[in-house]
Image (tube, rainbow, N blue to C red):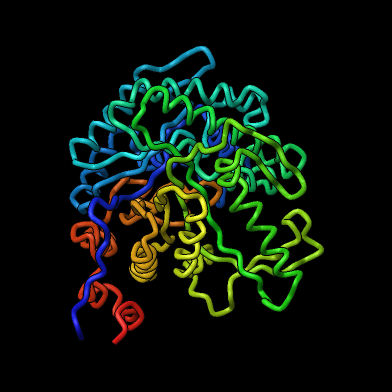
Length: 442
């Protein structure tokens, strides 16, 4: 076998992504903790509890693991309810703790990317109507201003809102996320408030930190017509794509929010993304279904021969990663893969999934796509929202009861890629020999 290497650009960011509620533990003052207490909300009735016990100090050992595995960056989020536990009160000790975490990354030579809203928020905001409240953008901006003033010394890469499209869909088109309304009525108002909040935060961050780079992290879902010859399937796939994938980044580019027949001018949002964060996991087949108006007349499914994760949650479709990055070019900003990974407790699929998706990233880079980094989801098994502990996305396995960590084989695989800035034929032969002919054809 001929030896070959797929090289990534110098200065490429290699890391993992995490979210506060999923790893910190004992976040008792936010909407997700309250959601967990309601019967039937979380698979198997599970609760986040201590999560990965980062608030108890275990972030130190996990940061050590990441650094020893040659990661040069880490994406984390700030828990709003810790910093502002009441509308009229700031917790300076929480800010000190986050400052210590960011210093910990700096000491380990790792670049932080900080997310300011990753699904969870204070109970007092929920009581005011959450993202339906007319004043929510102002309230979020006050929080952002406080964070940047306190932590900006250590951060210049900011994600304002993680996956506003997922929050909107899961909380207002379905009832998977709080407030679980399953009601289209307020959905466009919520989307408008997300957009205004991002725009306001963007301008605030740049006022306080001229060199900052600010964007959103969007979940890009690949939607393919189940029958390419069917106009109805093509229509349903296009409708899903325009509403789920396009709505928010389009608004940040042109200053107008569009959702189906609704449209709203938000001029202050125009040009408010210095980069686009792309979270990519899988691709759906889409068939038109008149009986599913709540799902935009679409039935989504995976191909019968798709390679699925253990719970069937993710299909391994690496070509969708290239599609996502190619789509991202339209926004004329740098691209960062802010999440990509697969739930796989036994680590059988993950090596293959990881290499195949990074191969598509390499392809994009070699077409001169402006891809600046990759954050794997995730570092350690964590609490996966409404799916509880049923899915294991971590490079390191977590025993929830004892908090013990165990290294999965993919740790060493990813470590070699991070260290060498390269995918080599030798690496593929050792970790996923079954895909070697696809990655390095003769």
